[in-house]
Image (cartoon, rainbow, N blue to C red; front, side, top):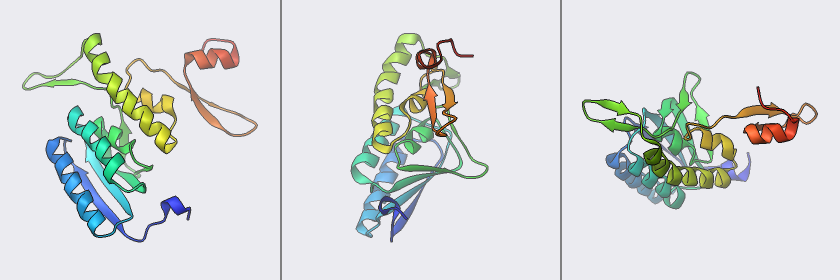
Length: 186
């Protein structure tokens, strides 16, 4: 087992339901308890439809500053929106065999009216700090930056290409595709 994945004392912390300020305070309290118990790894069991953006950003900061480097997300059974963003802030993401995660594009919920599409300026204002955080996490954990950004940015289009000689896989956008192949992507 690689040194970064070894653990002798693991805390399992469940995050179920919508992500909000209560979730953040609960996670903070349980991380403190795990540290006091000498945990050298944390598994976040995530089952959420998403939630509040501010609470999510605070959780990202908490994971970066208070959780062990050996923190893993376990998607069981779903992690959408805020759940996906939180998972991307961990060292590794495990998905239950019947689990799903993804789509973290910001939306605006209005009581009684439900979800509404955000205007372009509103979306840009919300996306900018979120994308900055996700790129930071991608660099910290070795995730593909373009793929991580595509979870949030509505207009992102990516193609997965594979080097037939080395087997290496890479996500590319339209500009990269044209540079590599001299033609527009399919």
